[in-house]
Amino acid sequence: EKLIEGALKLARDQGGCRQLQKKLEGNDTETITRIFEFGDLMIDPFGNYLCQKLAETCSTEELAQIIEVVAPELIQISFNPHGTRAVQKLIEVVKDQKLIDLMIKYLSADVVGLVKDNNGNHVVQKCLTHMNEENKQFIYDSIIEKCMEVATHKHGCCVIQRCLDHASPEQKKALIDVIIKYSLEMVEDQYGNYVVQYVLDLKEIDPEVFNQIAARFTNSIVPLSKQKFSSNVIEKCLALKVPVFVEAFGNLMNDEKSVIELICDSFGNYVVQRYISNAPESQQELLIKIISENQGQIKNEQFGFKIFTKLQKNYNVLDDQSPTGNTSTQGSEQRSMDSGNYMQNRGNNQGGPNRNDGGNYNNNYKQGNNQNRGGYNNYNNNN
Image 1 (cartoon, one colour):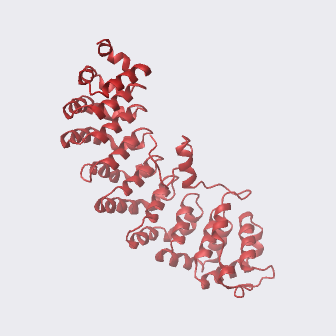
Image 2 (cartoon, helix red, strand yellow):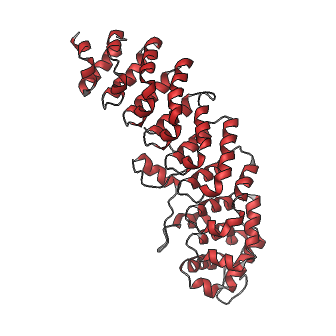
Image 3 (cartoon, one colour):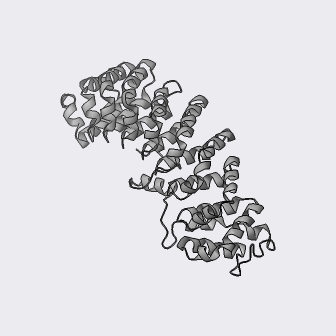
């Protein structure tokens, strides 16, 4: 009886919270009915664990009472590092459609705010994984409306990726359409570029989507190739051999000045290397010819010298100004750029800027280091 009378006080104490949780394992509904300052408990460092236990053990009627009490506060509770866990537990256990509708009513008031919040974004992701297509539509409606704002945020870019993972065909198409619309702006952003890359990496998708995205870049190949973030996307378009983009990049080979500009650029030189490793043989020879004929200028530039050295090793670009060297004598294996090695050393070259990749970001994110750029690979909900 003393335990029941002091339930609220005990719920905020580590040892008392554990005692209450054990009592709840016996389905003691009398204790449950005494604890209805639920919103305050949800944001308490210890009380939130009791709230989660209550959500798991109470009846449908009692759960309805809890939802009705906390629903108006769901967004503010979700912003709290302890409250977000309790809200996620409610999303997991609530099955009654009327209660789900009540939660959606209040959560839909600020989906973008939740997405951009360090704690709130996990609540949105929990909705994506535990709600059916119809119930989670409010998330897609909000993100599509403010797609650029969300995609260029460090948490938002990851939530969009999860939206693509858990979408119905119709939801996925609607989201991809708006990403295509803003893709040119996204690729130049430190987080937005990963959203575009993620779309390009999707399996079982209409190849025309790749063409539609790449077509946005064809008139800006040189500036995008020289930009820290967009150059990653340009490389991916080349690696995927997107027809419309490969053709546009091939046409760039007729502009010798632009080619040399890319070769001597800190980011553009990696794009050129990627093009060489994926281009048709005729285009490879044309590019190597340009490099050979302008090697004096290229070798005097820091990044130009590095790409020249690699080409000299892999393609026998000679100092004697030979247009193509003996590139035809060693076969396709010698002609192929070792893209694995150059990608491994990319950004680690002395004097070269470091372009962080999505994998590194995610590893650091899991360890609590949120200072890196947003990544596009396997953002896991570790909340």
